Image (cartoon, rainbow, N blue to C red):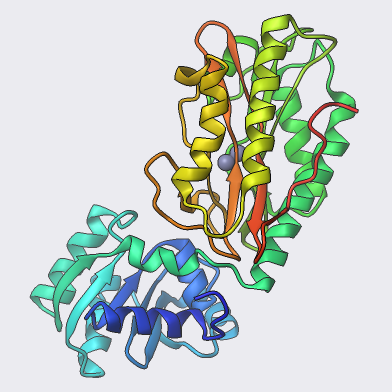
Length: 366
Ligand code: ZN
Ligand code: ZN
């Protein structure tokens, strides 16, 4: 699985055949891009035996011709077709398709599903729609060297933006100030956009792992959790640092040290052959032994690629075995209600013998 040189579409065709499915309709931006090369989400991609086609409209025609030379293009016209599904159904009938089709049940809208049911199944050549998000998404788990390089660029942009943002970090600025500067620097450092809504959570706000940025003024001695990432050429990065102004009280510093130890120990252990649950346990045990187990309320990490959150999950129940080429975050945290919180996150990829870090920003302010 690690060194197959087949194109993504060829790998999907093989996977579909093994699952006794005759085709797949891809509707998420990530899978449309991964399997066809088309960088807009305004369209659907159909993959079947010996076939790959993109349905899109006139606004994207020239772009599709340029980005998808290997893909058959089907033009959707609003005055001719009821919807994308009817346009696709017409083409499937023309090419003589029949059979069961996988769809992305996790992300497909209800309207999209209903139109597929009517046009592709009831009035079209498809016998059944089967929700198969994992089957499709798992083909993105192992990154090629080119994909790793692209994710590395996104991680590097985040590192550089962090370095350029730190000089403004002082007591008296707001969370929103810090967020604005960081996002500006991310774009200056090559990011097309942030890979998710940047989190800056200071003091009590740090108790919420996914806090939203507020106008709260950052005070001396508060833990400030900053979670951010870049999108470069469509590929994402993800990193968290928890910093402070002046010095911390003993409890806050202890929390930071426990999280750092859990992070460092799990990072050190990351290697192929380990299950997601085993890596999660390494970090969780350290936090539990320190007495903060109930405050580590999420999983240790997740995959990063065209989506900022994708497989493999490093969760308590994850049986996924780490393989070379997988990218994952290591991000233990402690969140104490009415007190605050801390998270430290790095992005790594699994190598043949261990791992390499993709994020390199310092953990404390130099
Ligand atoms: Zn993050
Ligand atoms: Zn993350």
